[in-house]
Image (cartoon, rainbow, N blue to C red):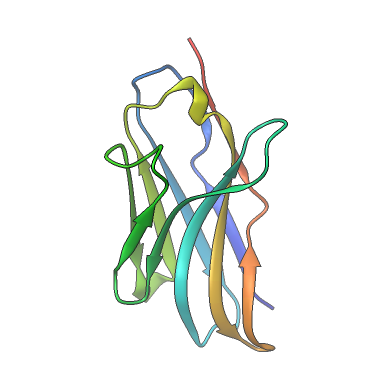
Length: 119
């Protein structure tokens, strides 16, 4: 069974930084892409950032230049460094992995971690 567990959420003031982590565990053969999504109250879930197996990255326009996604392949862990946070970044952040596991290729999600940006 594959599990994704996020950590690092919390309450910060505008302009501050936060780092999220996601650790994948279980019978994982390879992870093709690791990503972060978020869902604000009353809005649909949206892509924040994604990093491929080869290290290619893609960001939502709203976070470019402020957020950085990185990965540690050896640890099956990936991170989202969030700088210059804004109130509009407030959301539940979910990590996502597209990987080969015991049931073949699949799309897996963590349970989410809340990030609140408020003064």
